[in-house]
Image (cartoon, rainbow, N blue to C red; front, side, top):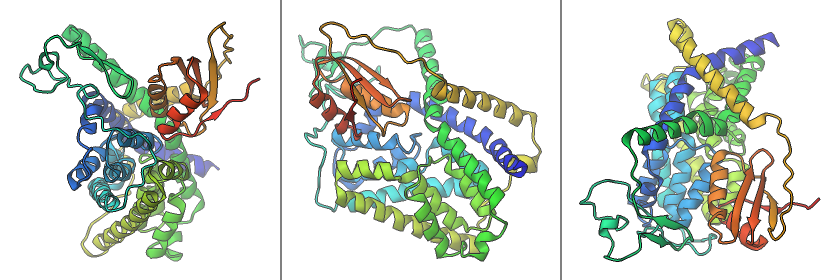
Length: 457
């Protein structure tokens, strides 16, 4: 047992500094990248929109459950099936939060190979999907590239985007209502530069070391523990002896990885441990692809939203591409001198005081994340208010803060939803107001989640 604890501890020490750097870059991307900018690029069913979906998806720091509602949101706003599948394929495999730990734990070549192949797989899967006859399950899909729904945030007085007040016809109201039921204010708030910088900094801190780490912390720790179990239980050379160096090892990784719920970052220590026990780099790569990109819950949502044919193509192309790029990686390693570095780099270079400081900071962030997620909460009893209807629902496949924001934003679009309360730990949704059960449940289902009415006490 001591050996197991030691293995987990050493893996954690190794990956923690890279995770902290990855979180920091994820926060920077969050404050710098405008979501509407991506929406504007994905409306046409052509190869260029597919390429852009893959390009946007590779660096985005979205967890494996968060990418599905995001993709469904893009689809509802007008993205083609090909662009949606391209985004679904490339985004969960890697992100800025996992690229940096991949460099640190598996070496520079894998740090490049992983995002490049994710990009290529996104393009391939999207291109094939667009050849299939559409099977839209998301009803009333409207293209959102309209001035009322897409606002431009630049300060250029020469900008021609119609959302700017100076580009609207004279006398037109600055607040308009779009087809999705949300009013958008086209006026500009006048903020002092110091206030704006403070708000951006708070947003960065809240996302990088709050919302985002909350989304991946459980999966990350599970991944580290699984890696420790592999290191502890499986003898050295096990996979060499039992076919892990060949095609059989890749098939095993597909069987394990397809239904598994693991994030791109949490899959890294598992892959490192597998390689150290003798599995081929190509087989470990297959796990790095199919583990984060698919899980049983996400496949169910994709099938209900985009259709079974598109889902079948998505899984088939992803699996074949993973096998193909895995075999290519083995060829490069065996014949062209490419190395996949799985050494404990921090120990090889000597553990510096800076690595210890960064690890300590990340540990505090991780502990606070678990405290926020799992601390005991006093049950709040909502007293019924005369004349106010309170509807309560259960959403079992709501797993992260991104899920919460997606659902909350959708339900708040309903005219009869006066207040929307979501408890992620209890997986409950409460809606005060005159919105009916059917309206609320249809709205939640349109975001890709399954919802049921909670039983009344």
